[in-house]
Image (cartoon, rainbow, N blue to C red; front, side, top):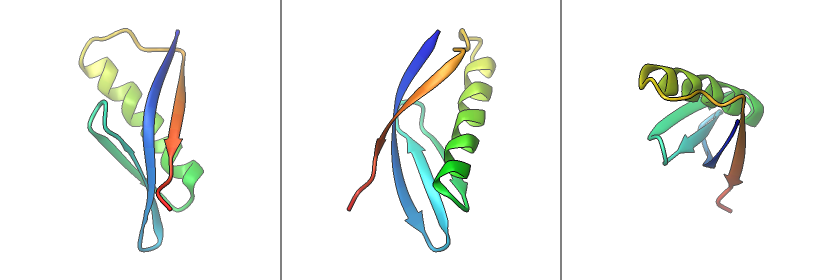
Length: 66
């Protein structure tokens, strides 16, 4: 199963911030990839905590404000 979520990437000081508004989750990382990996981990945890079916993969639709 695949879950598609919208993610906004922004930068705060020296960190990249990945925000998923659908699930009200935020993750930070030194690189964009680190922030997305952390967001993926948080999504898995959130879905497990809510006793929802956990997808086998996530598809991130990324928005990056200019």
